[in-house]
Length: 586
Image 1: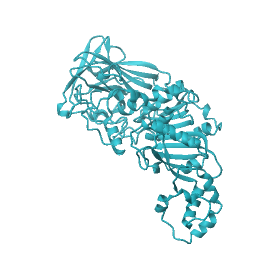
Image 2: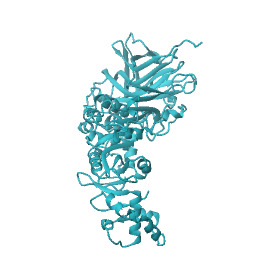
Image 3: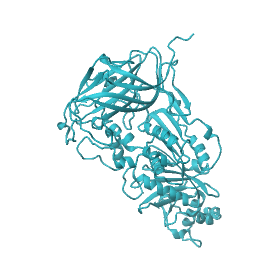
Image 4: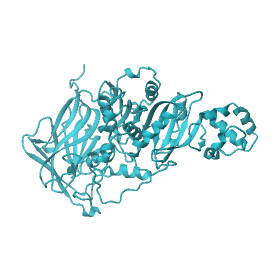
């Protein structure tokens, strides 16, 4: 499909394109005898507005370009935002008479990466692709996702006003384009009627930047560097509270104002997995207008890229049901009753032992709700590295020394440009700065589906520190498959909204949100919890000082403690959905 650049203030040129379409065949025959520009030159030509006026043209090439545009119905535009910044926008229109509903993608990546226009125009949709500000040909300075609120609003409403548009706008995107779609929904753009969002969060602070208050160093710095923004030269580690800017760009604070029915598609090992879940749950129960009760959630066993490690899930575990997007848009943008509204709102992949063909799990499940019905079951940490279903009866503790100059290396998990997935933790779990707890081999398989929390009682002899927690599925051969891992910065023990100093060696209660999973711990496996204070470069190492340091040579060693007592019982809460029968089958 040819790309024709259009200059001038008015981007709505379909009427002008139609006026020359009847002469295309004759003109093409004539032009075939003339010298032509190369394909690359054709793509880059800028056509002055006066070329589109009726009357003689200056060259056969000009007429030929008009004919290509008329048949392809493609526009290459610079669309102004409210502050005058113009964003590079491609418009692809179906053949025939409009108007059509519009499917929009806004992206910081090359538009060629979303060059799927024929798929949309062939299904009766106008396709609009736009680079966000400061990226490629778009004007302005790139400032990450907060700008996508106003720009998303302006672009949706611009598209709704075009004569080739029905005024029904849908948005689709994965990762950064998915976040841009979420920000447009947050903007309250009245003509945004539906969305399909894959592997994307609606809360940058909580899921993409500072989960638990700890900076996701490798993911953020490398990704921003790809957008032309170098890592901060500020002393380290970076500290940030859940401030007004974070609150403004967090969909979780505005579900009741968002009226967009959305399919959220996420992965258990994806960098934004909990964001997809939170947005489904929040909009399904609290959303405005068509959002409430009209959400969809798909969660599979995949990550932000290919998984690593020796645990391999079946191919169908990563099925994202991408074709549902057209059924979703047909229903919400065209009003076609295709039955999608009657389908179960939730589909999730229940992971399991991939080495035992008779093991439960490793299958897709459907549900009317998320979370599914479960029992929050405490698994208590005990001496000797044990996990029991009963609380401790005596006061005990485990202490380890964390040295910021020798952090624990990242091995798997929800990463972007690092190896990811259920990797074997034995590479790091035997270190002396890791506390390792596990159950006895399970006499019956345990099914878990939902959000995981660790409730810990901790202390430190430093001014501040981090506590990081992993939930691990230990296979009978010893393989320690990572399921989820997150942490908390101790200064945020009273909440992410404010920093609170701690007293040295005083015990504090902290709650670590480990995000969600769905898995069956097979019979004979062990459920394990690993606690440490570092996981680098996934998380930026803490210097164990209240203020950041110019060099980690100024960092201090922290002696960090996990307490275990009847009234200070450190534990992990698992949403248990089923205990399988331990008896052998007949």
